Image (cartoon, rainbow, N blue to C red; front, side, top):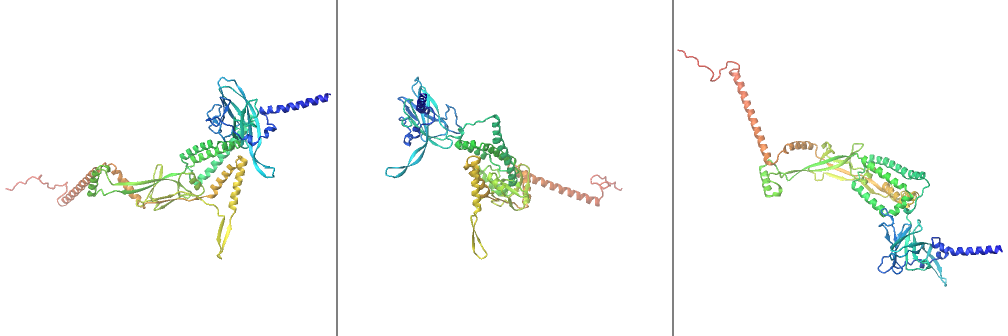
Length: 586
């Protein structure tokens, strides 16, 4: 008797548990067998919106509305519940967070009402079916169906509820969400109007981080932040110093490129935030490594400058005339009166023009002078052995040492139209030859195949992709880094540049020095009248000096003749007009 009562009680318990299992699924548990058998035709419908309403709106009763909002992922997204970053759901949207908002608009003052929100995640696959005649065909079916439900309560007026979604970090799944009254049948198996369809793919940025202790968090910071930063900084500084020594100067990156890089980096963070955040979450040491490389580049840029300024000066006389020719001066003054724009009549129409070019130089170990231009590509070419050495046509004695920001000054040939020719160092794209042909002494042509460079390159790319997948979880990142290194070191070959200067003759610097010395005196002249007046005064003064010298010379000659034939100045030589008359003899 007791055994019979126990069996009856056990049967009642099993029946009651089976009846209670659907109610448990409605509250957020796993789906029953009936839910797992949902068909694609039942899951694809997305409901219908009222006329002239946005795509996210569904009707709730006679006067109410439902609206679904989602929060995108991004660097500048405000994650507050009432922030302006929330967007209305659009068809085909991929929600990357594990929650969304279901808004309700009802009459103000209405009592709170409960709703059941049912959610199903699934993928679309293919299944082979056979009809009665034995013909096989493939059709699309719903696979990996997962359903669950949430019970929410919404008040009158504007109110919302947060709907949590199950995470999907491994891939993107189709999702359908619907609402119903608690006493109504399932809205998944009975499609209605209050349904929304979208995609769900959880972003790695939404993952929660847990640490067991403060020591574990400290170890995480040292291993993944401090050590990679220190290692990359030291490596970049050491390698940068070696490259600067070989390149004779740093890259000298312009400030505009730093600004463009900052703007481009910020835009990349905003646009590719999902991929970037997922990669950095898997490999947080990349942040400190990138910071160390950036610090090393800045240090090399600031402390690797060994260049000095060199100037190239060329004089040319244009529209000139001979100032000692009176006819040329009169014609120039007449032209100045007739053309007021040409200047006043007293201005000098003849102009000595000069063209001046400045270049940055660096001295090599053997005394050679190499032109240095700004740019990262030129720096990389110089670091790999390329250079743009100075070549001259003329005597280097025309170089003039100067003080100031320009240490050397070169005088160019005044008769040459283009005395400077510059071609910067750079790179040439050279792929290794897969097939080469050689001709033997007998006149035969032998074809040789060289597969090793391509096999080595393919192996390097495959290894970099594997390393990127293991270290960062992103094989495209490893492939990009490996491909860039392969291109920079093997495919792009450095090519030399050239700086040619046609210098002035060896005696030209003496003439220029005399001209500049004479120009100091001419700089005080304000007009041609002053110049002619000064010239006339100088000539008159010179003429007076010559006459005085001639008078002195004539006077000295007469004195010597008188002393010789008459007597000295100290004797009793007769003086005209000073002697007394002798008495006459009686």
